[in-house]
Amino acid sequence: MKLRGIYTLLILLACRIGASAEVVLPKILGNGMVLQREKPIPVWGTASVGEKVTVKFGKQSKSTAADASGKWQVMLDAMPASAKGETLIISGTNTIKLTDILVGEVWLCSGQSNMSYEMRKNSKVNKPDTMTTAYSPVDEIEHAHNPQIRIFLVTQKNLAKPDSTHSGWSIAQDSALRAFSAAGYFFAKNLNHDLKVPVGVICAAISGSRIEPWIPETEFDNSKNFKRISKDSAQVSGADGKFWHRMIEPLVPLSLRGFLWYQGEANMTERESYMDKMEMLVNSWRTAWKDQQLPVYYVQIVPYYYSKMKSTVVITPETLPLFWEAQGMMQHQANMGMISTTDLNDDVKNLHPMFKWEIGRRLELVALAKTYHKPVVYSGPVYNGKFVDGDKMILSFSGIGDGLVSHDGKPLTHFTIAGKDGKFVPAIAVIKGNKVEVSAATVKAPVAVRFAWIEDAQPNFFNKNGLPAQPFRTDNPNVLYTR
Image (cartoon, rainbow, N blue to C red; front, side):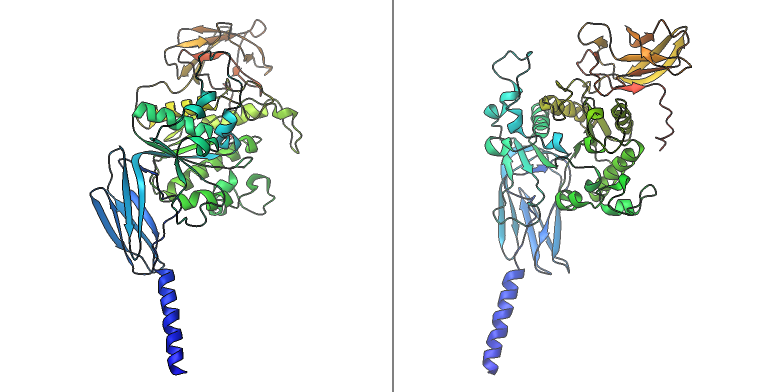
């Protein structure tokens, strides 16, 4: 009996050692991935306590030991871009070989349905009348076979457990591309074309999601502006961090260049509170990655008939412009940027418009200018000042580019003007050099001008670089938006 007990103990010990000794990697580290160039590269996972783990890539070899909780991490030195597939070897008791690893630019895309909008849907949209060539972005899946563009689609479940096959990353083509974000893909395609380096893009987006679940719930607990009194609280609805925990946190500390964000439709009735939440999201993500300089570039949502929807709150045709204003004010914070989309909805009854290729292109222009410091025009006209000259209000702008223009050659649309009575009337707006003169016969002493201040606004005020002016009002009191 004594000998039998010893055998049993030995068997149990062998099973325990065999079960715990395996080196295991998180799902995001896999075959075909892209490592971020010019930054230290963390490689991490789990193993048995105290187990020595060695990571080799190219000429580098780094070792560490798993800590008391079985976690380990090594930092590879920063590397230049490389389109040559290499093998990343992680060895402990077992050895894992990740093949076809590139070095380039890595971006994380997130948000709701317009970010998750798949390339398969992009293939079904009507080709714009202006596209007369045989090839158009609508046909992209048929032509996409560039091994320098890699994609990883995050779901609510696929990061939860390690994958012994180390799959997940794919070349942006065929079925993997069909299921991937159109905006994210076209961003990557343009970036690869302009920088001539591999690009990896990760998409973690959920249709219909509010901003709150993407923020760690501790941010609300510690916020002076929000308290998670109940899950039914209007200002913190869904503030349980579930998408953060399931879809973003498991990606930390993957080295990447920045974030792309396309969300807001589900929070459209907010203003100041959305700005606070956006600030919380940005700060918490940057904190998780231990880099307060990581850029966040995002999309101003499109014109849409929100006021015609059934809603438990009052929505007027000016509710959306107020949200646009809140979105627009965030772009002036450090390492943030926004694209306008007033021209990118061919049907204002459609909350999920086509033209995702242009969304991706405009986001890439912002990244080129603000992150990669390329001399490109990345924004349309942005209101930045006014003065009154008699019966006219003279407006000035940044984002002039090569000059201000009416996109269709017709008189400028969607300008209104008001005097002291506060009644806004349609205005005549005329481009004079790099300024716009706004007036109306019935307003002798103008006090304020508004532009695109209605939910279905699709104005023709652009710069000559083809980028639309952002909606604005000169009478924004700024009281609600003090930071």
